[in-house]
Length: 311
Image (cartoon, rainbow, N blue to C red; front, side):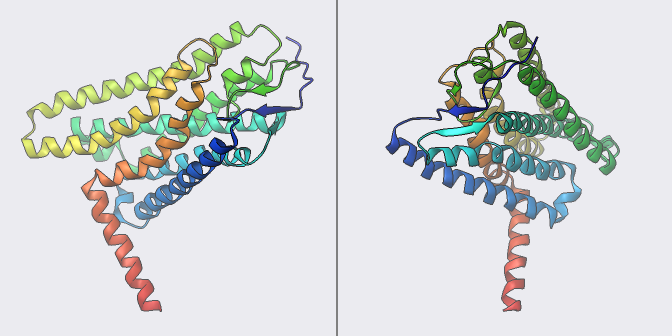
């Protein structure tokens, strides 16, 4: 296919064209973005400066917080600046860059969530082999594998879009550059490309989601024989992860598992995995985890006492 582009920039229509709604959205999402940075940095610093970093579960959690920060930062700043403008323009090169980075960090997040589920499976179903299977070297190798897998996914996804010609309308009914809105603007038959996108993004999300379900099915089967106290502790550590997985995967699967058609409602569902999930992840993992709450008190109370002595 010959790729001829007459378009040098796209117009992002955003969430609304109403000025009052745009101002309200700007204030709300500015608060959300601040909360995302504050909450995830809070979790990362707390884990790094405590003994929790020695545990694989929290080691992966710190990388999840980092991927949340990077992921939402590929989308939210452009969303906020666009809400203050009459026309939100983005160049072709910036659009393709945003597409690649968004799927790269989103892929890392999906794969890290899968690794965290595997960690809980080993901890509960194979406790005697846990320290051997989840050694620090293997934890680093798993994070590296997540990055490599996400890069391959994102490269393939971006390559499919870059190979398409864009020569017609350039108005995109979305607040960021994503695959399906871009396919609807291409001036060629995108049926085969759409199938490849579903095979890449949709199947990646579906397969990882099935792996997560498989892991927690084994966990639930194993803890049946546990005493009530140990069973509740195991469920409390897993429930936080299940909540985060549900919040992130349900809208992702809704958008990417279906045929390549873009709907106006996709913008609302996209808010869940680009802004809402990264904002609530720190709260879910801290408020529902007693061990995490105790460490937060120790780390930050120690730092406050240290600062008081300094002054």
